[in-house]
Length: 310
Ligand code: ATP
Ligand code: MG
Image 1 (tube, rainbow, N blue to C red):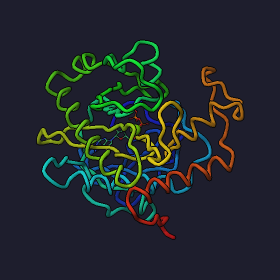
Image 2 (image 1 turned 180 degrees about the horizontal axis):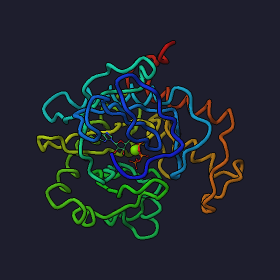
Image 3 (image 1 turned 60 degrees about the horizontal axis):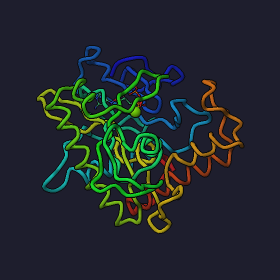
């Protein structure tokens, strides 16, 4: 919890909680009775804001915050089961009425400044680097891969967390070691690949290919590495329809790709390189994005999404 933050966020008046920080999507609060910066817990509220290409877009996507929160909670539980259980930051879902369904109380962690990405398929920025250099974050890949080719085994492709308004930057494993040290870098890599491998298998049973995902880890007061933030959501992951999968072209997806595609299409009239704010999303793009997020949740969990307060 540090650095700039997203200035456009509207902090809520939540009884018992004091606003401390807003990222592009989430707003963080600490218990009002704790000294600033010293609480053991935080309240993480997922807003309906959507970001793409490092811009927060207008308008928000209805129910997105609830979908992200409910899906993350489902995954945190799955990942905490069994032999290779992963420790996570969730403490409870006992949250103020005003943010019911889209917030969780978590253990406050000292976050590592690394976006921990695992890729089991090559696409997006990974494909761009591969086409130029034959590598992804410096890792050499086999020849002849196309958009959507599977990578076996999956690779750890970290990026450095940037200040608000700056682009996260892909970095090599060696640069990760320079930032966090050898032991932490190895622990982040192993834990990220373990999360990906377990989640990829769970998603596959639901007919969804988990092409890649981003997780964030922090350290708790005992020194343990703990999974924080959100996990395995359509914001942080690429989810493809397994039925429709065919390497060599873009894949049908249940994630943010739909919004990125609209933004970079002639229909938006936006030039990504211009540095200007993107145009507002048309109503049908908002509605279709909402539908994709809800479908990802429903397919993966087998549950019906119920909007908070509905
Ligand atoms: P930035 O991380 O630069 O603010 P962002 O726009 O991605 O970027 P959000 O994801 O909207 O930010 O906000 C969530 C913030 O909360 C992130 O900074 C994340 O690292 C932090 N965070 C998540 N879980 C915890 C935790 N348990 N303890 C402390 N900080 C956390
Ligand atoms: Mg984030």
